[in-house]
Length: 299
Image (spheres, rainbow, N blue to C red):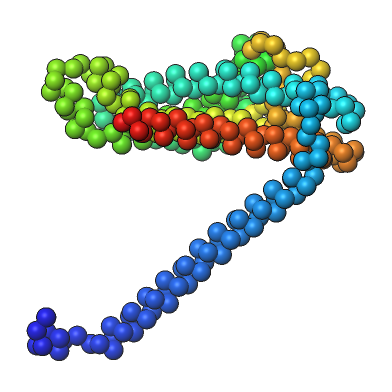
C-alpha cells in the first residue's frame, strides 16, 4: 500500500474498533464458557447423586428378579424384557417406513408446493410433544384396533413418535451425497433404482444409521406415550411376545419415583434403574459409532 493511501486511514479509529471487537470476543467467549461449565456442573451433580443412591442396589438379583411390591425383592427383569420386545417392534417399523418415505420424498417426488407442504408438516411433527403421540396411540391402536396395552400397540405408538425424526435425518443424509456420484451412475446406463440401491444409499448409510439409532435411543427413554396408553405400574408375568402386556425401564423409573414418597427405598431402586438405562443408551450409541465408522472406511 502506498503512502498516499495510508494517509486516508484513521489509525486511532481503527484501533478503537479493534479494541471493541477484542472486548466483545472475550465477553462472548466467557459467556459460552460459563454456559458450558454450568451444563457440565448440573450433569455431574445429577450423575453423582444417581450413582451414590443406586450403584449399591445393582446386583444379579436386581437384574434377574421380577417386579414386586416388596422393595427388597423387586427387580427389573420384566422391564428389561419389555424394553427389548418394544425395540423389536420399533426398529423395523421405523427403519422401513422412515427410510422408505425419505427416499421417496427426496429422490422421486417432484419439487413443488405439495412436496413442500408435506416436508413442512413432517418437520413440524418432529417437534410435537410426546404425550400427543400417546393420545394418538391410545385412540388408534389401543381402542380403535382393540389391541390393548400390549407390546405391539406400544411399539407402533413409539414408532409414530420417532418416525418424523428418522425421515428428516435420512433426507439430510441423502442430500449430503455428492451429486456427481449419481450422475456418473446414470452415465454408465444404470436405472434410477440401481443408482439408489448401489450408489446413493450405501454412501448415505453411515448418516442414516446414526440418525436412526439416535431416534431409537429417544424411544427407549420416553415415558409419557406409554403411560397414556396404559402400561401397568406392576407387572408380574414376563412378556414373551409382542402380544403380551409389558413395562419398560423408563416407566418403571417413573412409578418407583412416585412410590418413593411412601417408601424411601423405591428412590434407590429408581436410581439403580436409571444407571441401567444409561448403560443401555451408551451401548446403543457406541454401536452407532462403530457401525458408522465401519461404513465410512468402506466409502
